[in-house]
Length: 108
Length: 113
Image (cartoon, rainbow over all chains, first blue to last red; front, side, top):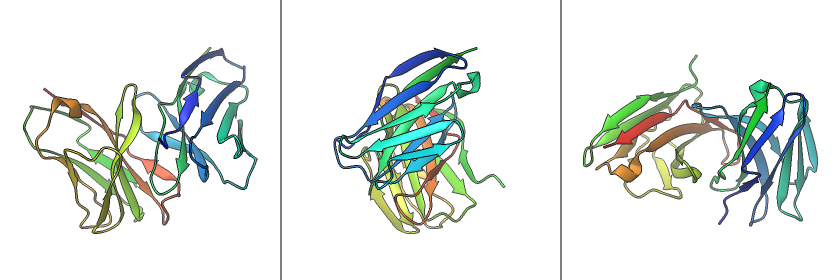
């Protein structure tokens, strides 16, 4: 399966703490993207990391990519209640596969 | 400027009926996609289109039909709805390449009784 697997499936933290979630693939990674989905809404693109990049930052987001391990991680620093959402990764090739996501709950 | 819209937002239908979900974009993006989202399965690609009159199957195409006569519209039809097609359906657009960022619509919640 080319489906990405996010880990953990669910994560609950206190506001202000950091949240880390991981994504792994069985096939080779091309460009890897992370998306956020708030309850009842469509997915929103967060960040794209290319296969020749190892780390990328965007505001409070930090994404790393390890092509040898076929994995990526998303770190959200200084979390806020508004970060409560599900987070998905996708390895974009010719088709698009999303995993089941990591459900993040940030407790105020 | 709505970007990408889906209609209806909610739909209840009965087994065996034909249902069409609409997707419209104002960006002139080349790619358009239909996904379904179910608990425990994440998002699964149903069909996608690289341009007008070009469509291709995704992971779960059975029971669905798509067309794309105009760049801005990508309707999804359930020819004979089944209960297993109860789901939330998302349309998305993408730029000039399959690897580009996708922009998702708000979704259509479909219930088949």
